[in-house]
Length: 257
Ligand code: SAH
Image: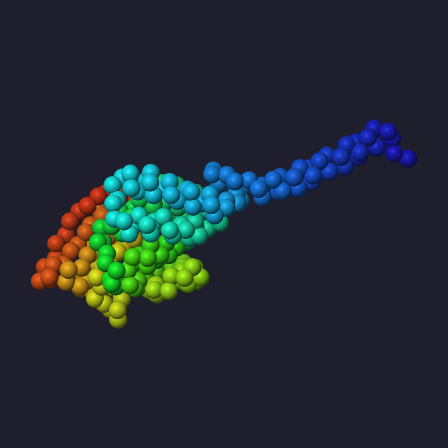
């Protein structure tokens, strides 16, 4: 026969287990309804909240800092950035910062996406090349502004995911290729504009060659753990190339194989 203290401790043990299980279930139920701007535990934020955050992002981070191109502002307000960000980081989607998207890569800060896009000075009929598809977000922004976007990603997993995502979201004027963007995409060249979203040690000559006369190339140039220069390269009607350093930036490196 068990002693009384023994029975009591079994009872206490069982009761504590029950309390733990019940509190776990209650937390699960409550989390489902929690709208938290701080992210954390698997937050579920509804589309209206995201749309509101996106509006604020455009006003406070982009327009406030001097971006005026109407098309760019509209695209940034329309494209649901959070759908390009992995679930665990989704609640940070509209923060003023880059965000990890897997494979050691990041989606650029919203302002930088807008700034680089504005620098390209795009027209509706343009054919654009992007090097560094990543999540596909920059490509989605471009797709709202031009006729056709070609984008190259060197990491197969990222490129395939991005292609699937862009298609599911209806960005039918974007074609994704897995490969080394250093060499450009000669089959579709020349391009009206080229944007590189990874930092190169120098400006790849194939990209300059694949730029149309009158075209613009935007590319971060510099070493890996350094502050890099965002460069604007323009080719005039007589194919004369002019290089300008615009602002200091920090990007993940352009991978060479
Ligand atoms: N534009 C992306 C973010 C770019 S991060 C977005 O909107 O999410 C830079 C990307 O460039 C990474 O995905 C990286 O894998 C890719 N990259 C690096 N070197 C490359 C190369 N040589 N060719 C093509 N893509 C490259």
